[in-house]
Length: 115
Length: 112
Image 1: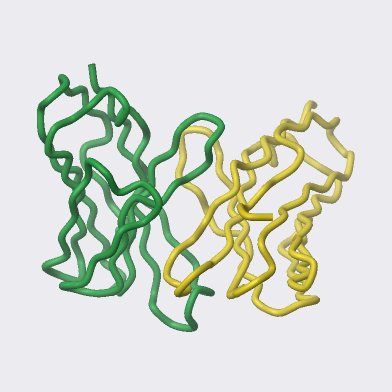
Image 2: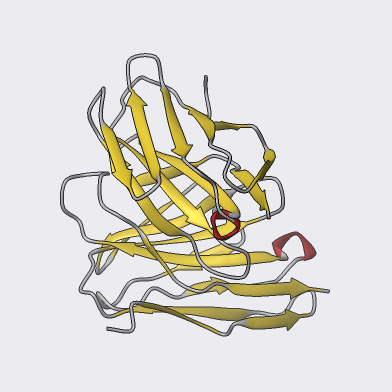
């Protein structure tokens, strides 16, 4: 198992550019989520999905879109990048067993800089 | 308490010392409390998931306790080693039990 994979590892964008951060998992997990990590603020939930075709907003969804067409993939789209989106982005997945008590498995992260 | 709060924010201990840190969280609508270990340049790794009041979990020299009625959890490290240096995150499952709310972490440095 590769676990949770994320691409790219690093990305530099100019303000206004768009891009997609890729996330894939091979553990047949139903639940997937995206977090951003900023200094002194821990991990904040951007969007999450409880299964293919179902997505919902987290704590900081503005400026980001997601879709979940397959169980394996959960891409995060930045439609018009802003400097405030400079951050490290983590994708995570978990098996949807006992609600809320499943271990989350994190990807290696994508470090995004918006100039 | 409205959010998940961790204290202290950072901590330096000598090798061999035992230490502990605190995670405080809203006690209402509680589902689960998670602890993660996060080394620099790596991704967070799960340590414990606890659901019941009074739960105690242990993994090697690291253990954790949970008090859901008063809304806190303690993480203990016995005989700290330099390889224990990391940021320790706690997270509470909230709302519809589909979201994790993280604290900002306790950064532990173990000095040789």
